[in-house]
Image (cartoon, rainbow, N blue to C red; front, side, top):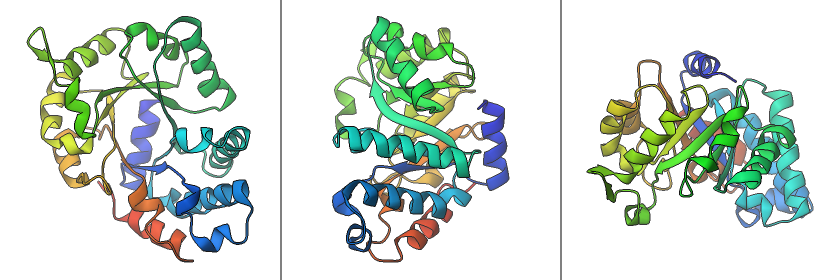
Amino acid sequence: MTTEQLYSEIKKKGSMLCVGLDTDYEKIPEYIRSCRRHPDAILEFNRRIIDATAPYCVAFKPNLAFYEYLGSDGLTILERTVDYIRLKYPEQFIIADAKRGDIGNTASMYAKSYFETFDFDAVTLSPYMGSETVTPFLEYPGKFAIVVALSSNPSSVDFQTARKDGKPLYQAVMERMMEISTPENMMFVIGATKADKLKEIRSFCPDNFFLVPGVGAQGGSAEEVIAAGANSKGGLLINSSRGIIYASSGKDFAQAAATAAANTARC
């Protein structure tokens, strides 16, 4: 998918919403768990959430930790979830929330895994080991590396806001990543709880998409994010996970998720 196609979807739906599929078996409604065996319950939950929220979002983001801990069953669920989105909602942008960060052949294999085996549109990456962790992901036309720059967790200040040559480290990271990429293959993670920084970040990064987690359960405001961080075409994917997929624990969970999605990240 190109940035123009993504911009087009945002305009068509009037939404910048990305729904995070951080599916925890223990939080799935008892209604689903009681009538499906363990792996099937997760897949069934995902499918119903996807069906309910697809009209109101432009992207889905499975968090790989919630699938990998289940071993081979989890990877099968992940693959079938991606296949389901591709089949029923081909206009959706699909992000692997993996936060991988390695070099050489390892990075190349990660890129092959997410872009070829699983057919994700993008993958989140940790840049701590340098630009070599990212370059293999830039070799796939229509695919995106999403580099963590300024995250929403409180301890992000341990490193991300440290000064390097008079600039915060996250800015140095972003500027280096922009040197080796284009807005057609690079996005950045900027946490919604850092909305006060978004306007400043837009000043030196006007064209790249930002993936913005932290809306909803983590306390970030979609309205503040859009006001501070949108560019002339939008340029934001605003993620909400728990606030949408666990909007209800009852039989109405899918409708509740649809209602929550419809009221989040409108533009």
